[in-house]
Image (cartoon, rainbow, N blue to C red; front, side, top):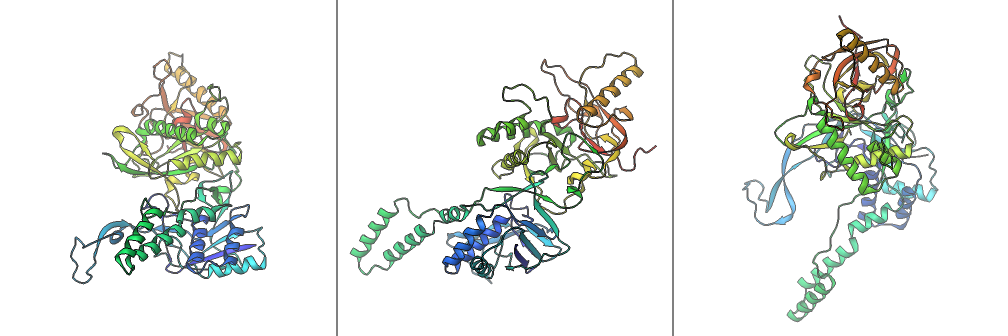
Length: 526
């Protein structure tokens, strides 16, 4: 086996990927690899160390990650001197006469429950020369992430106890982590552009140190010929290879209750306000938010040329544009409900994939969903403002953003109530109120069977939800048919004879965030 052990010397991890205010946790294997590459070039670039890096990037499987739980620290804006702008400082400081402007910067920090992280390859067996090269590199790594994220690194010989295990799992993946692959070292070298930058600096020194005006003119001419565009570019390192990871524990255990056609391993994203008049979105915004999210994913899917199967899963249509007759990706609102202080706001959203989807297709869907998380992307919702969509990187998210809160995985639940109203599959024909309610209840029972669940023993049709913080059904915008007419919808309570595992979403709007249910703690309350 191979184990790379990392000790965070201050008990704090500092580093972000995507948004500066969001901590990257657990550390991506690619970030650790980049730290080793940096140590390699900063300490002489020995051939045996380079050979070890090439061996490491060619490993066929990404590593398991043993990491402690982390709590996000308060984000503080700090004013620091910038490196690329010389000149007198605009702010006068008596104690530190800095000659560079200071700009606001935020540094995402997380306090760790323990100091040690281990990247583990169970099947890797490095040769003695490779192991020696890796050991030498580990001894030279001083930071992972920001320069203040100081670490000690070594080759481990045992796996730690008491740490959360993140395992590569394409079927149950809840988030995507960057990983190295064959060719990563060469790509980092091209991005750094070290040889060209070093040559440019040498030629600048030759101009400055020229002994005569004639020699200085000649040196300037040679510099202009070699670098007509000025200083060569040095790009920030970017690794775009991802692997799906799942936390090992209750959420990856085998379900005990009967499940639906959808996987209980939701892919959860946090919503972050970027611009606009509202501090948060609420359940009444579900339709506008989900429709814009679907459009954005479809756009990026076309740009990245996904396989037809992955495109169909996202769009809900076959290659011939006909609607799919099987389960596809459902888009879900994760609202703060079911609490005495609940107000129905939306801290996050989620994707529910069919349980039968192949791991490689799930990986494609996760890869395209990661495109929306880029800082330049996000969702623009008109008068509702602009919102960022970020994967959950913290080990202990809000209760609302935990998949088990919505799926009751693995034990299941017998009592469920809607958080968004169920849209009728067809218009009820009954005129009398009692017959009308019976017809709607039967429609909802058939909706449960349609997604692979048993028929509920009892269906309570109601204009209000059993969960605190959920608006009444009439407060939600109605879905429209193709002819422009509006579909009816209602809240409901579903009671099953046996525990079932979610996600439970039924009705004509189940793929667009409507008809989404949450388990009721303790069953019905009279």
